[in-house]
Image (cartoon, rainbow, N blue to C red; front, side, top):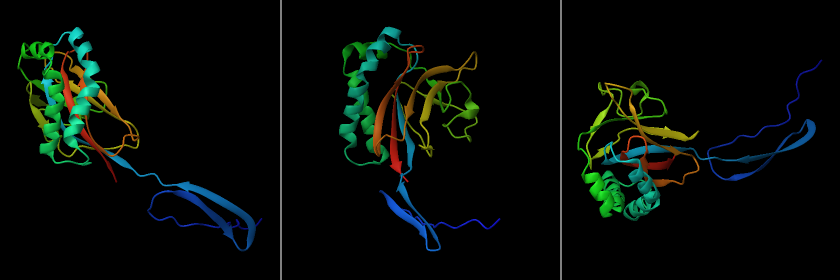
Length: 220
């Protein structure tokens, strides 16, 4: 028996890009090439949400809203501009611009205005099953485990940062003390998303609520 042979080494430092390095050690003959690529980590930062309509819209109305998702995102993007992490007042303006893509259509405006203004008892969760104890927002310091959100209202989401090592799921739930919590809709965000700030439509046919979610992708 003998000791293991040292074949060579290389020290990597923080950086970017890709390349090849030679791995060799003078005493031993084998020569290796190591191919490498740096991957920048990304984080999803939840910024704000806007309630367009609390629960109660008919399934047919929701089916007609869903195709507007692209127009909503485009209207918001025109307000957000090229700033990858705009201040909250700009984010809020983008949410309002996205909402206008729905509310400027008389059919949707009439349907939404006819619905109750009772608030949703909202919480956000990474899970597709109910449970306020697993919530992303509001903070654990919130003893209720939910936030009242009225029709047309914007709420800021503070200090929710989600590493995009794996796809992130953000599920909208309404707490219901009398029965099971109501699932309102969800979004999945992946690490392939470019750095920047986005507004997306969140809705579901079962409960008939409509929300917009603003989030930023940052490189860290």
